[in-house]
Length: 446
Image (cartoon, rainbow, N blue to C red; front, top):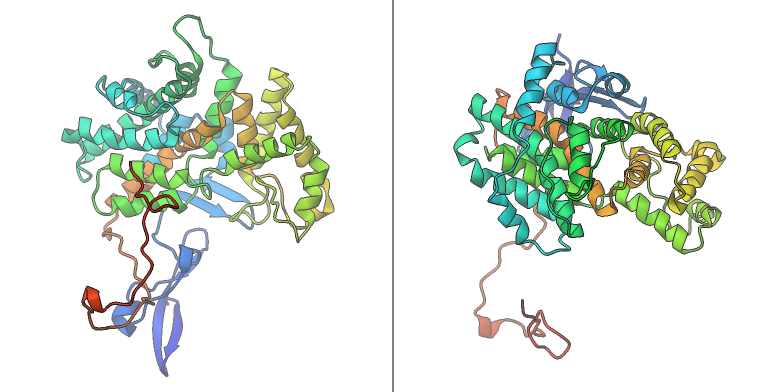
């Protein structure tokens, strides 16, 4: 017998279906609520609202579980590569040996971007943020491949998927090279995915560059850890934009813009900015730990605790080991890393942090590791976007192929003025003029 929930409004009882996922998660199905009752639900931030049914990622924040298509994040980071995880997320299964070889070959042969896109790069200011460039350039891809971006054509879908996976690292590396005034470095298709990204970021034409295997493996693991994380802000953006049947380039461009927000993808950058703040103040981590414990202080330790994971972040436990290994191998002195290690040691053993489960999260360690790899702070979110791309693609593809797929259209509760008569301009109340100018009232130009 199907389970139902009962909702009583004005003395009238309504039966609402209760649906259950494969991992035991339950939800009240309100898809017919407005038709049956004339009412909608209100849930700011959608914290209690399921926007879809999905078979891609299972996340249990209370127990610290993260699985992709049934595989634990621990197994995937230990035994898989980033492109293999991408195939799993997008197509539902880990590839066979032949499938893996074909998929890698297809992605690798599309790493070059159209030469005319170089002219678009040149139009950006030298100090343009890499995320602004990344979002713009991904959207520009739809102008260069407009004959093969029909969202409902399976062949167009597959070629677009491979192009995005291949070209996003190239675009990201070009954005970085522009910011530091170095020549663009073309991809080297003899290298693996993460090694090729490091090559494009850090090699220069006048010197030989050898990709460090341990660093490439660490980066590959970082990308896997960010590959998908259920219905977060940028993933919901990809689904909402894609629901209009916009092409995948446009949907991913919008997701990149959403990820750019400091409350979403900027967390690991905020960690490094916090560490720099502590360093500039003399490097006394103890002072800031005391401030974090003081309820009257406005200071907040960045990179500790998580909105979803109420116990521990399984990704943090994985990346901590890699972070320690890479730092030990590199063996260089960095005052920010010394401060980070002090904060980490305190959080793992201090009763205040332990009782509140304020453990270091994946953003804490990823920021440290990116810095150790030589990646500048304003590129952190770009690296996050490269890692999250397979998840965005998988979520978009699942949404497009869903039999009940329709354009997203949230409702609202209107709280503005009620109907009122229109007043001619000479009968409206006087108000002080407002201009976008300087204190003397001169209009702002440009």
